[in-house]
Structure formats: C-alpha cells, structure tokens
Image (cartoon, rainbow, N blue to C red; front, top):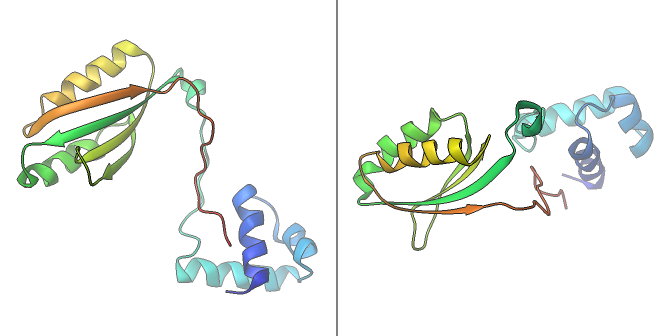
Length: 148
C-alpha cells in the first residue's frame, strides 16, 4: 500500500459514494486507475464493506447505552452470542478482558425499552451480572480506522 492508496482510503472514509472521477482528480489518477486500486484494496480486505450510517433518531431510537455483561462460565458464551445476534437494538457486542465478559452498545427508543432489553438479557442462562451506562452525549463516533 502506497501514499496514493492511503489518500484514496481517506477520501472513501469521508464519503464512500464519491465518484472515482472525483477521487482521480484528487490523487492525479485516471478513473480506471482509481477503480483498479479500489478493487485491489477490496480484494485484500483493506476495505471490508460499504455501509449507510442510519441515524437512530429517524426511528425514534434516541437512547444509547453501554452495557457490561458477566457470565458465570465460558460454557455460556456460544448461547449468549447467538442471543445477542438476534437483538436488533444491540448494535455492537465485544468479548472483553477485565471484570466483565462482554460490552454491548445498545441504541433503543427510551428507558422503558432499555429496561425490557435489560430484563431479557438478565433472564438468559449464564448471565450473572450487568452494569449499564447511559450515554448523555456522544463526542466522537467514528466507524473506521484512520488510514495512516
């Protein structure tokens, strides 16, 4: 990966829908050369996917919470992960080191819907302890690493 690839990645990170023609002008390459570089970056897995970032407020989902989960035993990991995969309000699930086993990022409508989800989580076999933080304000929410 060279400096031009990094410039292309920075441009795509800020706007994945930008035409190759505009990228080409920014990096002094032809449209076809940009397309070929992007194709190679995709093939190598540097660009893993393109996605629309949907604002939760459009669906009245305005409450963000970070929930720590502790399981009683690792034998419950698979079942818990399958459960989490089916929950629409859980946007992220991270298996972590420390006092808890999992960190969940939840975006839901209101405190009542969070309480319902919390009760559902607590009723899962193996869940021993939870700890929830309500997000008051998001300062930074980046979805990708910075190409450097």
